[in-house]
Image (cartoon, rainbow, N blue to C red):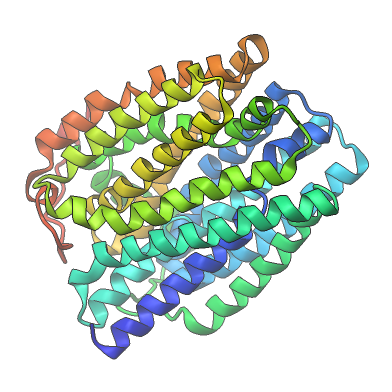
Length: 427
């Protein structure tokens, strides 16, 4: 890798680390924070659903910002908006606000995340191509998985410990400060390379044009379409499971106020992310088709969630949690590279946002429903139901495999997408 490409990689890894560190400070305690504010399980997961609804609502417009106004601008806006709405959460918790206020601010947090989604990855892909290192994509994604897991390990433990010795609101304040620092780093070092934002059209026209192009490259392209649909089930259940495991593990532990244990549980998941990032490329070299790993990962992940739901022993639950995280981490870079291999540069951020939109729509639909199942039958039952829902992703991954072509087998990203199929291919 040449010096310019190394600088791109270092910037990407630094921003990935900073974003994950700031976010993970509250991942281990988020559900506990909402319950401590007086929300029921159904309301807590409904608040999370409003967050994902905000992502669904704003994914395409903010993806257009990244593609038409610049990926750096999009990332910086995301850091600022997310910091402000995080502080808004603290204000709601402090004042005991009604549920409608939580729903409103949760939508704002979703807006902040949509400025992030797609922008950083799209910037990386184009910058590596511009610096002459397009073959490094899968390797960089795996390193980012390790960096993200390391940041999550530190952040989740720190968040739990800070909450244990102060209050549940303090980690959210620290998170807001770190987000502003990360945004400042991006403003200085994240320069748009290999990509020139098209500012000639107005925002409305840019939204229409890029959305049409993204639909052609996304829903109009069969392997991308089926991969996106599978994300509805996988991500929807994954969102719920990650946050439900916080109170579930404390329930198994026997102390609902042991916030440090919740942080350590999230740290165990983070450790599995690091290991998954390390072993993922080795597994990939031994499997000829990317979709083989995606299908195996979805099936194994569902089996592990079912085992978690049926288990009633804390130590066993932690082992199952680590294994579940390891599986998800090992396949994540494969899915990222497979998707990037099918998407053209001009619409990359918007298509990635469209993919995120469908995944988040799964969160909107499934989190409140599974939260209600938890209210009626307990967290274990809700995880069993979630495992069954996740299996619905398998037929769509099989359809993507059938139409994936060379992208399913390639080890390095292509530089150009063929002309996508026309509207007649839509079903």
